[in-house]
Image (tube, rainbow, N blue to C red):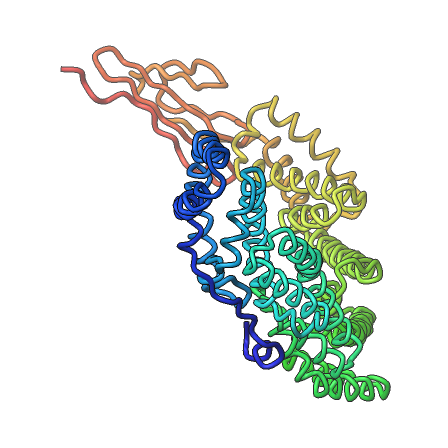
Length: 521
């Protein structure tokens, strides 16, 4: 029992009694003395009754005495911890009580022992319930009801000390009828006050919150909810003052100031629901404001074709509102416009490359455009066109780089046909035009025979590939089409000689020597 309960209620102390007198053996000895005295006056009849009692009831008394002792010990131990208890002296019957006991029948004595056992059971339960109630300060919140239970328990102790066990049990039962419901109310009253306290906190009623949590703190509070609630209740006025300040700022549209006020309130009490709700609302308004600003900046950048800046603004807006369809649409629009512009620039560069007959560059640019939009028809057509032009350019370069091949009639005819087709192309650039002019001149030159002079030693047999066998001669003149030729000279006893020469307008004045002069050892 705490200090308050000690001041409010007087401690109940039962009267003392001598437990040693409860021993049935002692009762039997007293009874034996009485029987001896009565035997003088009553004679043989009373002696016969004594013999019957000793033979039939004495064993039961001894057995009951053995079963009572542990209960007495438990009762003494329990009563040492509580004001509601029976002192040891109370179990010692007075001379009058002993006389009464001596007059009880064996059946009545057995019933009395049973009632005493029942009373001890009630006492034990009362002590447990009383301790639980006092631990939870029932004397404060239960008041007169708790005192009424104590009074019944005290009355029961008085009857118990008088060995009026039936009456004691009636009082103990009434005490338990009060203590049991009160024990059931401990958790209910505690929870009600905790709930009332938190409701008062939410409503900003500091007085009601303090009252509820102070009452809840009377109970065993392992969760410390009452202690925490008291701290919150003490800060409640300051918390709501900051909330009101935040509301004023919010109404004036000063969102940042309102946010700071609500944050200050939550620093004082992080669990204030109203401050949490206001801060959440303010943060949403700030997010909306920032979102709208970023969207506007993004569209300005988009209008100026500053696509990187527009994408940056729209992406920031989308982070603020990840589910915003307007931000997603703006991003798609920006990417589409940026891609369209990139494609246009790329195609423009590709067209310029085609005009300058830079076919490799043009093809690369068309590929870049197709990466931006794979089904872009303009890029597909342009790439094919550039590839054809590149192939023409490469073939003409190959023909012009090897003019000697035109000495072959078949090659000459094929090249001439290719020239005819190529020269019919429209929009020929300067590079292609020059290539065709060079090819035309080359075809004309390669078709005009050139006189050449071969010299030998009249001993070497000469064969001229692509022309025929020349035989043995000292000097021979021939008319050959420009190109590359090979002559072979053979002579018995000498190594064959091979001479390659190019026929052109410049070789007409030179003699070509073919003679086998290296002997074979």
